[in-house]
Structure formats: structure tokens, C-alpha cells
Amino acid sequence: MLHALQAEARRLANTVIWSWDGFRAAWATEKTLRQWTLANVLSAALAFWLDLAPGERALILALGLLVLAAELINTAIEEVVDHISPNPDPRAKKAKDCGSACVALAAIAAGVAWIVVLVG
Image 1 (cartoon, one colour):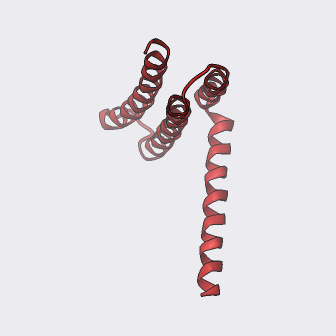
Image 2 (cartoon, helix red, strand yellow):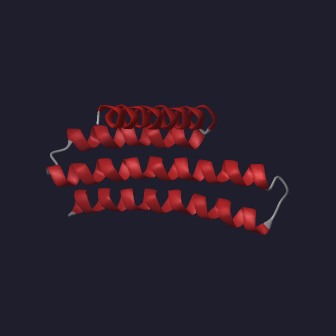
Image 3 (cartoon, rainbow, N blue to C red):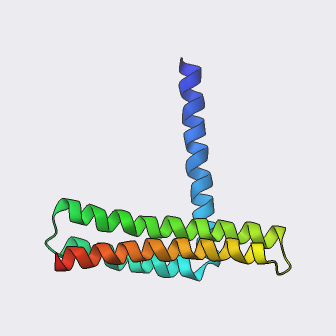
């Protein structure tokens, strides 16, 4: 039992380390991640400054994090595609464009949430 708990704790620690490594690597090379992070900090500050219901605030914060997650997924797609297909290829372009569309849709969702919360 103790050995199993230690193994799970080690696995969790590795997951945290690898996730942090991934975020740091993307932060160092991806201007858009830094821009979305700044937008999220401003959005979160506004969400806490305004008199929002807890559910509204949670929605705004969660969608902001979703935008960051989408940007990280897009970065991963671009890195893999560039590694596998250094030459122009329509499938590589499609994969990268779909990753970009993922970020755009997440950002639109966050924007729609803000509009509904503020106008609603």
C-alpha cells in the first residue's frame, strides 16, 4: 500500500514538473502565449473588480484558462508539424491552421461570455 502511494506521488510530481517545463518552454518562445496570459490577467482582474455572481466569475476565469490551454495545444501542433514536415505541405498547413482555429474559437467563447455577463 505504501509503495503504491509513493509511486502515485512520484507520478504526480513528474506530471507537475513536465507540465511546468512545457509551459516555461512555450513562454520562452511563443509571444502569443505571453499576450494571451496578459489578456487573462487583465480579464481576471476585471472579473474580480466587477460585482459578478460566482458562476459568472468562474465562467470568465475558466474560459480564460481554456484560451491558454488552446494556445499550448496549438504550439505543440506547430512544433510537431515543423519537425515532421519542414517543407511546405498542404496537410501540414491544415494541421497548423486547425490549431490556430482552436485558439480563435476558445477566444471567441471567452469574448461571448464577457458580452453575455456584461449585457445580460
